[in-house]
Image 1 (cartoon, rainbow, N blue to C red):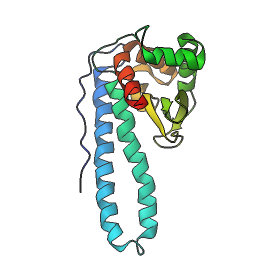
Image 2 (tube, rainbow, N blue to C red):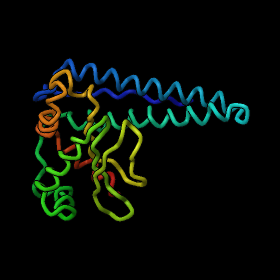
Image 3 (spheres, rainbow, N blue to C red):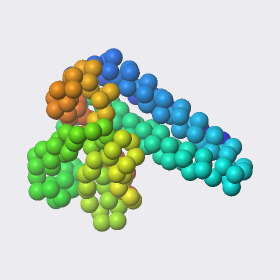
Length: 198
C-alpha cells in the first residue's frame, strides 16, 4: 500500500518559538504520518472481511481522518515558517481578496487573531471557498472537526498547547499568535492561494 512520507522543513530561527519547541513539534508531525500509514494498512487488512469487521472499519476510519488531517495541517503550518518572515505584498492577489472580503487587511488580521484565541485545542484556518470564490476563516477542533467542505486551506495556525506552551506558558498564548504572524512567510501563503484558485 502506498505510504505517506514526512516532509522535511527548513525553518530558520524564529522570534519567540524556540528550536526545541520546533524539534518536539516536528516529532509529533512525524507521529501523525506514522499513524496515518498504520491505519491505512490496518484498514486494508480489515477490508478483506468487511462485513465481519464493519465496526472496526468505522471506528478506525474515524481515527484516520484525525491522523491524516494532523499530517496536512502541520505541513501547512511548518511550510509557512520556511524561508524567513516575509510581508504580504501590497499588490498581491491574496491581499486584494482579503480586503474585498473583509474591508481591510488590518480588520481581517485582528479578527483572525481573535479566532485563534478560541478556548480549546485546534486550529485557526483561512480557507478559499472554490464554489463561491471567496475567503472564509474557521476554527477546527482538534485536527478534524470543523473543516469546511470543498474549501482549500491556505493558512493554518496551530493552537494546540504543544505548539506554544513550552516557550510562552499557557498565559502567553496571545503573544504566540503575535509571534506566529511576525515569523510568517506570506509568500508561501500567497502560493497556497494561487494553487487554491486554479
